[in-house]
Length: 295
Image (cartoon, rainbow, N blue to C red):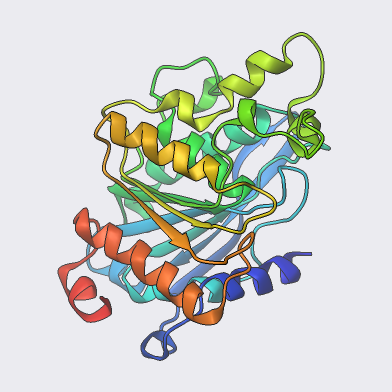
């Protein structure tokens, strides 16, 4: 399964020839970042060579799969453009719906952000340049991890006070769970599977909707979405952009013309990566040299 997800991620971010030679300086796999209900949750760390000289930016990635499937990528190769831009990479395991329903995955995402910041000095990461990202349900988790305020009723006790993300890269993630339905108009089955049924379902769907948590001091958000996405309608990203604009939060929505649910043409994949990196450059989150040579 992890190998399959890795292949999908390679398809998302087509590497440019100039970045083919880029590789992590060190790799740490299966690092435990939290233990919950007796179960250890892991992450993989791919450190950029720049971390040996000075604290450098890091990208935390959450995989997709409707909060119910998938796994963190088996390797780093789908992220070559980001490593070429000077970013280290952390890929995260989180609890799926079959193990624990909402808000478990969000709590895990927040704990991963907390762990990376707490260990930043040891790893050579800059705690002020932590970027969170994800695809589909992983994009949703990246948004929740980055948009939740420090004081909230969702965080696990041991992970309260998570660091502020410097930016969010959201790739076609659902943003308003109260406003995404099946073709019949009923609750979307993927959302219902993760949130559950009962009297609290509506309140949970609202609390798990990133658009609810946007504030004037929210981190900058880059959004990429295909306008032919049959899984997560592009209106979800359009509404996210509208609400970010209303509060003057720096953001960009890159629409992939004819793009499905991450099924972009090679040149479109390359352009998505290029635009996302340019967005980070515009926020002064990457080295000047990386921005000059890669964009």
